[in-house]
Length: 226
Ligand code: SAM
Image (cartoon, rainbow, N blue to C red; front, side, top):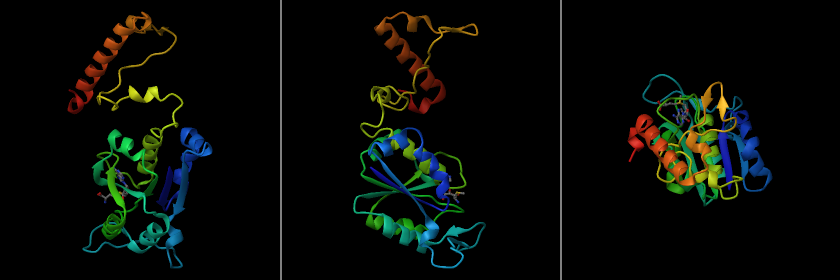
């Protein structure tokens, strides 16, 4: 998979060279290229924003540098992802389907966002998804691009050392939240690991975990509970 990220803050994406995404790049499973949007500006001040038509507070990102950037970066197989709080909420389902894409392009907005004509034109030429990280407002799309990239690339076949760890996670399979997890020591500051997990009885452990997953899901996310 190749991922291109277009941003006015390229340094924000440096963590993609760390941890598993960094390892996946070195293993040749993933190629990440981060671009400075200002490289596609034409004026001396490398301007990327202007006042909004119709008035109002804040600035809007001008279409020309975005158009030139997408012309240069996109290919026939590109999926263009525009992080925005007004997008469809990003879910594990999006991460799963995007993990089989060959080319993703993240467009990181700033200020009041990107001139809508950029998104509309991209939509006519490539697949475009306007996705929200959640019901809150960030200052820019970089954190959303980082979070979405991490969720997507960990599902690329061969990315995770132990792919079985993916199947029981929160939001996988049945869509329940994950049960609580414990490790050694079995007793810590007077708090004990539940007996059933020490029993070696696989059937009882599976039943306990499912019950805990259901309990958590009903308590915390009734919208996801069966
Ligand atoms: N005026 C916009 C609105 O009210 O919908 C908010 C713009 S926000 C300050 C600037 C940029 O941050 C957005 O263009 C987008 O790239 C990013 N952003 C902010 N919140 C986000 C979220 N919840 N999910 C994804 N991207 C977000």
